[in-house]
Length: 392
Image (tube, rainbow, N blue to C red; front, side, top):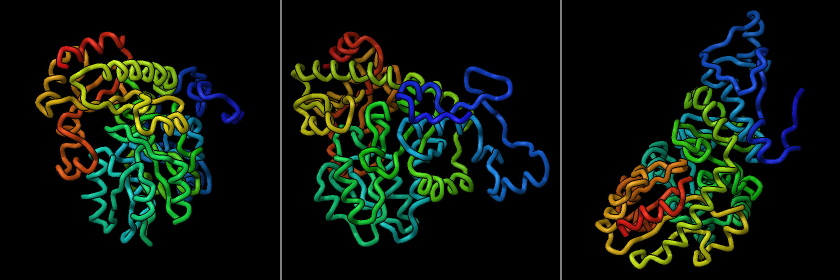
């Protein structure tokens, strides 16, 4: 029996959507660690390879465990199709390769993850795909930057690491007017807090490595959108290029999705409390968290997000020396550039996540030497405050 999961609420879908039990009747989703599949006869093999009959062919692009994860995440995001990839960066690269051709142009936010900036600046430029970077929340910048050959608008909202927001609905209107596709990296919010497709995005990107897993265990990415766009234009990149998610990793992400909403609520609780506490510390020059009423886009965050997320960035007085002192004085927080973990992580963006881009690019993105980014975990927030107090 086929179930229409759209009839159910978010947490029910997060636990059950996409699962098809095998003849063994397993309750938990099965892991299918196989590279290939046996066909009933030569005719069936030919029909599947010719795409005249649905079914498994080869685990580079068809695997039951991976498919369960894809269908579950597509349901949570409200998309028709999801493609799982080996990492978040593989998801972005596959999207660009599937949609763009030589001579096309991208308009992207300048407030992006460092590897995404490198991908656009260094790798895609080799294929004669140029990128213009704009201020994330300045709609006039987006409009002005669009050229006759612009095919794609790309952004993160909230951004990494300054937690700036873009008005997704407004950018949808700009993209429509200029016949562009709108791609939104929803890594920081996840569908538990924000659904870009419902706000007009054409494609949603995830680094499943982050909150979808939630415990820092494995790598993966995902692309969600319409069947015509994701299934027809981007899927061939996965099939022939092979940036494939492993069945084991897909199973891990399925377990992560089961607790996604519960975890995101606690992440938000802790992050809000920590941001409010940081406001009272004299050594802190500025805090970047959309849940604070002092954040310039607080109202927009209330409009398009359910809550404000689990990341807090702040700038300390004294530049890199002071920032490193705060980081090195912690005893509980993990000094690592990963995020979205149950364990709180702390990093210095200027020398880690954004260390490979030029000083001019960091300055344009507003990433100063005194900036610290914290991915707030699920520990008791009082312990996290005490941990920071040693260095502050």
